[in-house]
Image (tube, rainbow, N blue to C red; front, top):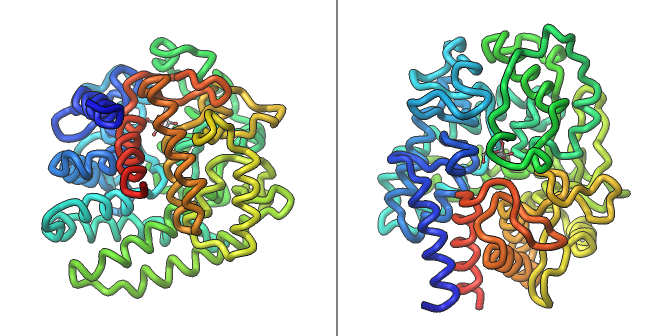
Length: 431
Ligand code: 9WN
């Protein structure tokens, strides 16, 4: 077996081991249920190898969709243990919108349309699958455009977990501005630090605030009546750029099910314009997320900001972004690079702590796609080579120290395996 086939076969074994029967857990012990954006990445990896499983994965996730359209960030399995916050913490059925199975009460970045598109393109006839999921996908986006777009034309996140990049330095000031009273922090017991090295995970101070914010939303049955009272509100670049790119994807799929693409084309264009107008930060040379409560952009260079490449930036902006990105990428060899979540030159860079420095395969993969879309295939290739280099040397870890290449967090991490398959196939296709 050549190196390429070997990597794919090992990645498929990880996905097999994490398969729960209807969906795939992100990791064996750390994340035992179904997570929203993980499942989208996992379906992308399975699309070309095990398309039946990819369709089941997405169907299972959308079975957890709320009647207001929200796709929850976790769909719980039957056993409510070994994870904090558990189903009994979230109590999703406090909301009349929640389905009969247990879910969390918040969401994650809208990458699902990209997964549906990837799966549909790999099926002999993708129309039956698409017909079953298309309206649900549109309802998810309607929720984001109607209930989460409150001011300024961008969708809001209400919890750092909704960004998918939980303890990113982008959220430091917003978190520091939360001043929960002791009785507003619910009692909880962490499970994560019993499974992986606590030094690689968010701190106790951060977890107190995660628990406080989740309980705040829960105590209003997940339907806060006064947006101004929500303690954490951000316009995240990654979240909104994925929404804009996903609208383009939906527009492309619409014809296959006889739907009208116009709304989606218009939404993608308007959202893209707003992202490039409101989130562009000339002094950083890239986009930055915005604190809705202060109406200020958050002046830090975060890898998620490069997702703006997926939202059709204008040419001059693109040139600047690509230059900034090139300066931040860390060489792994003469043809492979890693994308750290925070520049290694940043005083706050922590090489092994979660979203505060390590390289994450999903951000590298999304950035490679953004580069393809703005006509930078050579740099895209170096990023995909970076993905295969990191996993060959470090295994299918959750994240990697970009300065040494060592793997951290959970081993046998599903989206690392899935996107290694996708990157390997894309490298072969572009050779
Ligand atoms: C909270 C499952 C998830 C990912 C997130 C990642 C991490 C959860 C946690 O794991 O978050 O949702 O417990 O830390 O930050 O992006 O979806 O892999």
